[in-house]
Length: 123
Length: 128
Image 1 (cartoon, chains in turn purple, brown):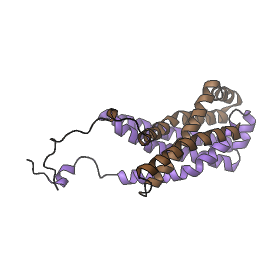
Image 2 (cartoon, chains in turn green, red; image 1 turned 90 degrees about the vertical axis):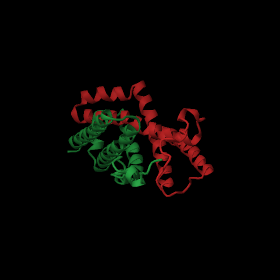
Image 3 (cartoon, rainbow over the protein chains, first blue to last red; image 1 turned 120 degrees about the vertical axis):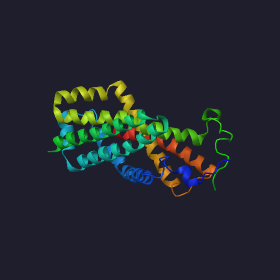
Image 4 (cartoon, chains in turn green, brown; image 1 turned 180 degrees about the vertical axis):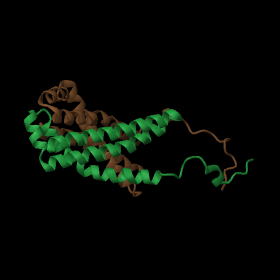
């Protein structure tokens, strides 16, 4: 027989931190992507395999460029939050933290690279 | 109330014991599709970087992404994208504690599977 209160058992176990903020961030980005993804699919899709001049001229236009920039940034931020949950479920200990940091950095790098490329095409 | 029997309770059976069900399969597919989309997302960033660099470099990267393997990856990613989007809508509905009854949840599951296939075929026809 143990005499532990629920609070005593919960303290220090790592829950009740930023879970709500994480959930809300994923919800907001998922709703944003619901609009962005179809727009991106039907602007980026037809350009795949087209000649270079045509691709550059197309993504120099405001609408396709802004849709692509938003989709890449919001998409990678959504992925960053999602892949963190995946890692937290299957990997534990130090490796968990290493993987989460690596994946978040990869997402930042990919978003920045995409924005740089789009800026260079559009400007 | 404090759980006085902690550590001395029967264990839940492991996941592998259960027969795969529509609800569990569609759930794990949401995770798989979402995370697998990293590959095509990085390919697309590479494609944009190449387009911003030079016509020659763009030619190389564009040829890789529109090769047979590239086409296959992009086609499967398109399905993964639609599947993940529809499954995400299902989660947005569930977040309001709506549609959680087994019958409704399974109907939504079939809608996600069927919808993703239809959208993938339609998108491919429109884009090509």
